Length: 82
Length: 405
Image (cartoon, rainbow over the protein chains, first blue to last red):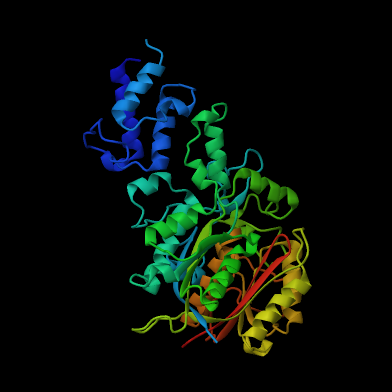
């Protein structure tokens, strides 16, 4: 999947897990915390993105991720390219 | 000597949400029983019978973010605490002097089963929030966070006596001086099909006799009973110290004037007449009541073949054969961990209204000579009542309540 597709998945997942963001544009450079995600939400966002991309890898690879932009970048490195 | 009173109530059952609606179902009981349908609970083969909540109550405090992750048990607990909190007018009280105790253990079985099934073969994709919801203390966190409670909060397990055990723990927490207010929550036990099957195999859960007539299945204390019938429910009670508030009148449902918890040194599901007698006598003694003073007893009355017989025998041996009796579970079903709290709410509603509720399906009482409130409600002013709850593992609990009219 290309980076644009991954970005859409990241956005969909974040909006599902932080419903207050529905209908708003997400600043991909804000931290997940600034977007309203608590620590459990953060874990769920990571797991849900890996699941959506069928990536069965350790969560450690996403440990340093702070923003949706970083998450998109990291996932696009892990995900097999079409 | 400090005293406690109950000043706030909240309740949700399959037939009612809120105390007023609950009172309606007690005095005009209709059928809420059918074949269990909830995902993860519906039987693969033989059908289970019970009462399920069709529409979840609206809870103002449940924002979309909480609503997305809250369990069914959490949703109901929050609804009941919200009702009880507002009923007692706790807003503005010192949050460090308010505690919250949840009665019940292993409450969330059905949803945990669904979560495991959803990710079967892909454990890495298990929702991380499972780490919160598999612990019953999730209900403590959910409710204390929502209402800003800063006193002690924890869970207590007492099997099917949990709802009364947590009320007694709340009473004792207030008596000890640790808190001025303590909310007792009889948590809903969200059974999965596995627990239903195990209860059925043990002979505890009915009804194979009435499998095609679910409306007749729940019949505690009736000769044709064949075990308990499950009913989803939850209840909360605000217990507070008499004199805790510096200003304003306090509406009190009743004082808790006696309470006892005892075990039978028994791992089995079997009841003990001695244990039941002991807690009833303890509670009456603490309350300084003779059996003749107790005008009404809210029975445990699970519908168990042996348990109901033993309970009536204990009642008579305590000298309580002249008290009016009824079976709240015939209307609500057996909530297991929530039952004692739901039935304490039923006691208080009846005391407040001076009216005792009838029983469903009590066509042939085990002992017809006792003072059953059977087919119709009974107008009866009650000053003192007793409530008994019993659980697997030899757990017995009883309280005495005194009206403050």
